[in-house]
Length: 485
Image: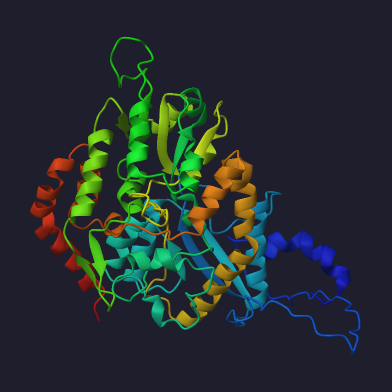
């Protein structure tokens, strides 16, 4: 293909044929170059101050049109995210992802080949590939729980700290999220704008706005803005939200309104997380230590347990989103991606962060569920620097082209309906968003013990943790041994 402007139209028509994800045929044509006429600068004019180019230091390379295969499992939940698309379709986010891939393909002379399959197939395909020593897939994405048990603990993935092409301090990587689950100082699972599942799976609480207004309750947005959206405030509203709609004198029945619904082993772990309490800590060397149950941690669990464990006020699992849509719940916890199922809800709803511990706590803390797909590089990749260069460019280009379109097209008035909700989401995305380490690794079933405590077994929480400590420590050591040199 000759470098002439007259072929630009042709290029636009054939882009899907040579650069879309999923094709394995390398593109050997020359890359077209666009030119522009720049006015001659006035020699006496003062030079304009310009912002430094955020993307100037992206690593470069020329890989001669070679294939760069990637593998991802197809999410079956309400999340909308994907790493790559096969063609432009007029949707802003879809087309931005496509253009990002085209740009990186042209810049580096690499043909990005994308495969999407089921969660179980990623397990089998990548396990077979690694054990066979096959250098085909250069990176893959898998549910974080599967990533730990099927790959990290078996020593199947690379430590990314050793790949110089990665700059994990760059804004297109979410270092808070990565640090919250790293083991010692090693990064095996990376999160960044190459895959915006990290946004879709951040946890929120949605609130029935007409109920708040009809019962003259304090506007939750005002409470959030004034720093008074706390555990006590939230739980008092949950109790007030329970209404005997059928008039039989009983609460908590299927036809009654209840104060809260959610899913136990997903977003509900956000309650302890948002109160800024932890069971694990890190030493100066990055080592992970189990600290036991602090007085504050037990206080958080006990207070939630007293209300969320009462069937008159709360219900867990089941059709928690359907109950909300049917005007039978005041509050529901869910992920941001699940807001896509709320588009036909007939009443307005609010989008809120999880409550702080008290008014003295400075910030609201965003919780990310373990459904997020971390990026991992198999140990069979021979040219790790090439892999790092391509992935760093994909992530940087995603930050440049995709991130704001995600906010503008999906969040702004497609996921939510009011400017206050958009502000809440942007606050959460810029906050100290992180994972619960026990949720990701679930050593000794600690995740289930936490949620049981939050939802009715608060008084037994300490004794249950003490009984499981030996098993948890053994499971934790197994993970740490798997990554030791």
